[in-house]
Length: 98
Image (cartoon, rainbow, N blue to C red; front, side, top):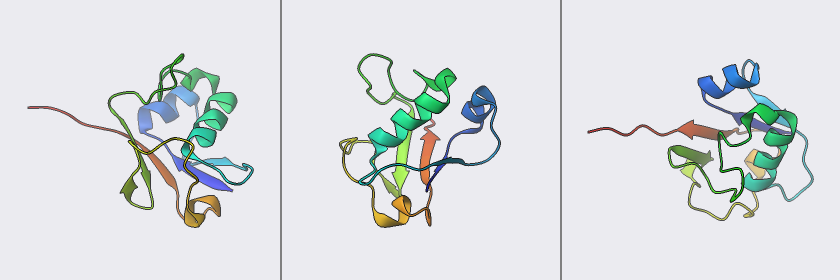
């Protein structure tokens, strides 16, 4: 089971509390997790990645085992700690300012 943590405003939009959980075929990837999120919570389509291009939104970051995977290919297999649920995949809203 893959555990996913999403920002508060996306949890409110999806009407969920806490973590999201998904059972995915191996090898799971960030892309397959995002596909599962959008399938289960259609109101999040376009909030994390673009509707048509599937590109990550500019102020969204993906963290895998405390590493920023935002620029990694979305079909790159997730490591075992994420795939077996011992670590969550974090989807984080980035902050910018000056």
